[in-house]
Image (tube, rainbow over all chains, first blue to last red; front, side, top):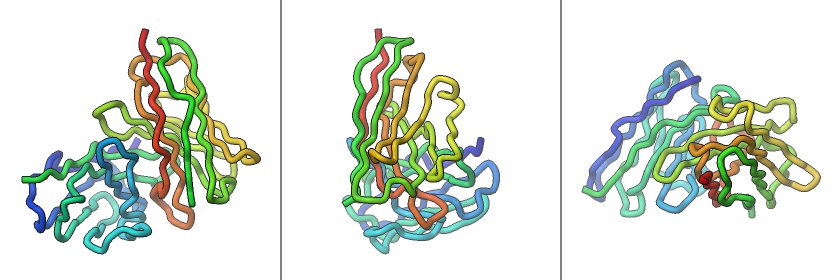
Length: 107
Length: 120
């Protein structure tokens, strides 16, 4: 099983600041990595697929980078609605795994 | 528009069975791989199972292998999860999700989830 480790567990920032979230895989997943945002009481929402492609309707302030084992989700300038949980997910093979999540909270 | 609607959740005793359904609409169901993902209350996301678009591949998380079975009926645009020998740690919201066609990763649509509570 491919293990995804997200860091930090919690990120405390103010609106307008830049957020940088990390996801590290236990083995190479090539570019088969996605990022999701989840708010309380809601299903996850796809933000980024294939490491760096924004999903439909996702604002340009969200960007993804990386390949192999190290990936980053960057939110260039936090808006109030961006404070939420973020998960990475690998799809290198059929047996998908998720990272443990990073909570972006208001400082 | 794309919709995924789960049903079948509820309270069930340990050791009993439950079948979840996911009704899909707004897209060509038969050409998409479909997954079940669960989330225990206050916890992270855990992938459960996949049924590939061509029907040739079904895979399960180790935590449910041998107890859960995924199936689909393309004529009815429905995905199912048969859950047997349920345990307390199966308590979770269960989501169905569709693969992002044309991409190598990502689930672009999710249902609202159905809650399964395993308790005596």
